[in-house]
Length: 183
Image (tube, rainbow, N blue to C red; front, side):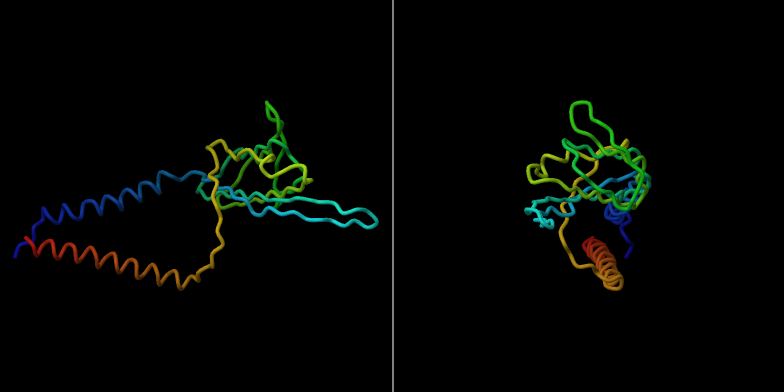
């Protein structure tokens, strides 16, 4: 029995195109990819010696460059800028915004680099009154929701990838086999 090459081409071409498209996308998207998420929002009651209790609020903002190029001039804009600290210590400067508020400017954020900005403020200020946005010369940062999840071991991930590849190859083989059988 002669294989029907037209049918094989019709089945294989979208699969090959998908792999070529993914490789091309990966190659062309060598750029910064900023992501930002909230680390925590909390309130404390401080009891200074000999004084009355003081309420203190805190939250943190984590900014990470997931891309393959450095992000330039990362700007964290604020309506109100309370006391803050940056970890790890990196170079930054504070600039006023034209309307009101200010921004923290980080000249560069290298690939896979992450910074945490921790804020400390009084209860008359709320979280939504502080933060505007995170941008860089290359575009706006993507805000993500973070969910706690267990970290899978490298061995377990490799096993999952192995079964995924074996299943994908088996599925392609069976589709091709039955398609040729029908003809």
